Amino acid sequence: MNSGKRKNNKKERVTPKEFSEKKLNFTKITEGKKERTEEEELKQARNALLNILEDTEEARKIAVEERNKTLTIIQNFADGILVFDEKNNLELINPLAEEFLGVKKEEIIQKNISELSETPKFKHLIKLLDSFPEGKAIKSIFREELPLRENLFLEITTLPLIMESNLKGTLTILHNVTREKNIEKMKTEFVSISAHQLRTPLSAVKWTIRMILDGDVGEISNEQRDLLQKTYLSNERMINLINDLLNVTRIEEGKLLYEPKLAQLEDIVWSVAGNFKQEIKRKKIDFKFKKPSQALPKVKVDQEKIKLAVENLIDNAIRYTFPKGKVEISFRCPDKVIEFKVKDSGVGIPKDKQERIFTKFFRGPNVIRMETEGTGLGLYTTKNIIEAHKGKIWFESEEGKGTTFYFALPTEE
Image (cartoon, rainbow, N blue to C red):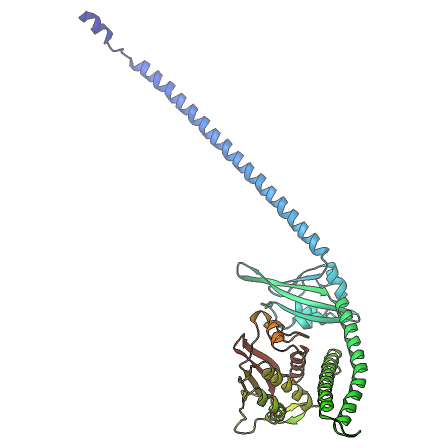
């Protein structure tokens, strides 16, 4: 049994020659596997590259398709479109913009804004856009109206093109507002004709009632006098409304004539403020007129128009201030301008309504609840009068705490 175990445990002997042959076969197998691995890797890399190329081509096709789609939209857009690059070279103009401006794309594309200003049919727009230095695109949004030619009015909107916080150019949109302007013109003409037709009989009523009140046609009882006085005041309100409407139509038609003369602004304001003594007394308002300690520089103004502007501001301050409230008038004289200020402790202007304060017929909901009478034309007229004198008007307000209106006029000294 022992001899059998020894026989089973006996190791197989390998000669050197056999060992070399086995080693050679193993090497061939290993190298074969290595060759197959490299070939597979190359194949995988080739497939991956093909996939990338296919994806790139697909992305390119999508980009081209989107670009063509965008260009089609721009070409058929209902507004005129122009695109300037960051150096103010015209990169794009659509057919409607060509039609509006009376130009051909081939003649103006890639031209700088400075060159375009020399193109006769283009100069009106360029003059409007030329509010920024050459080489610097507009950095904020603005809107203007452009009367380009007879019976064509365009609203110009300019926006910055910003990518990754960098300004890449300017987009200009030309919107045709001719229809709206024509409708507005017809409305203005209708109001003007109606106001003129109404003013004549109202004036006749005014003077007839005045004659009766003054006793020119005989004695009247106290009861009759009271009724006539109320009628007279109602008629006066109608006349004031008609005058407001006429002022607005004259402003819009450019027919509000100005006769500027040198004057002291503080004297004009003082004379206007004196007209409100009774109302100030009735409402027990703490009224302060801070007259300058020395004469202010003179301003060149149409005194009647400035009186109207000041009257509107003081009237609003008193009208929309509660009884026993405060109204204060003061002046400042910074560099080459005189600044007028009227401050009240009234109802104030709601924040979400403030941007409309100088528009026609606007009255805040809080003031309508407080004072039902009013046209909403006073501040619109005032703004136009101040700006016609090369001045500016602005305000600060907080609902429930009061409002401060300012205007500044250039001095002549």
